[in-house]
Image (cartoon, rainbow, N blue to C red):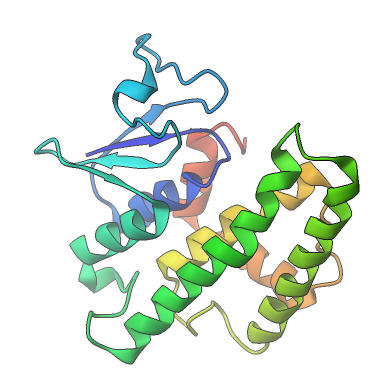
Length: 202
């Protein structure tokens, strides 16, 4: 498999999932600013949408959209419990978390990275993120991970997007449960491996 990623972007989530899964893969940098691959290929020729992540399977099939990609990865190694089995209510809870993180947290960070966003709008986006993170913080009370004791692909996604706070001035210090949770996730060997591979950790 090949994972096309941009360092620190939402593609870090499947990058972590692949390390957690222990599956063989090749990570290929597709920087969101240049869209040029290391060999000079135009990334738009691989993904016309131009964004990451994209997972290319060994048969050449290409899968886009992080929440779909991480579930595919998890289902290749059910014994790792990166996602509950299909058909269970727990699987739908996982999908609920992935959807929430994507639409309520990830998307609200977007304007803060966009140079065209009017300065007057940024406090509105930050307030919306704060509201959502406050709820997440309450949901993490007494839990190791989002789904309980087992690390899942939803944790890889939440860790990835909350990591962006440091770059755009979103302060996480009020969220004690979230901070402790992020430390637990960051300490996982697979997470460290993905961060190092992307040049985000020593």
